[in-house]
Length: 77
Image (cartoon, rainbow, N blue to C red; front, side):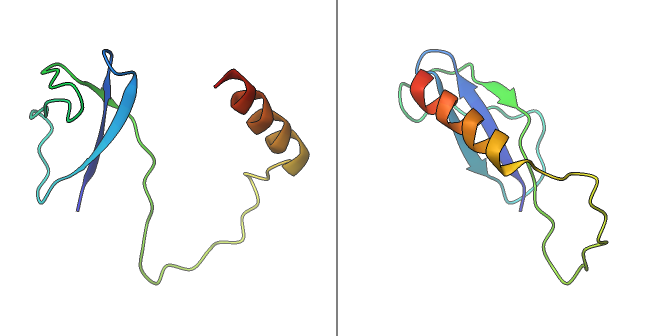
């Protein structure tokens, strides 16, 4: 089931919407303020099932740097 994310400039909020079919043209209204013009956002996706991980470590994460970045974002919020 596709998940679409939209950003409302009035509320400054990102909303996720589930769809039973793929529809790239339909844009919902903001559920918070009824703004009819939401901006489509790129979103992450996950692959589910029985796929095995390849063991490729191209995307290693430095935990200390990640924690520091998260703390900085929390202070800004």
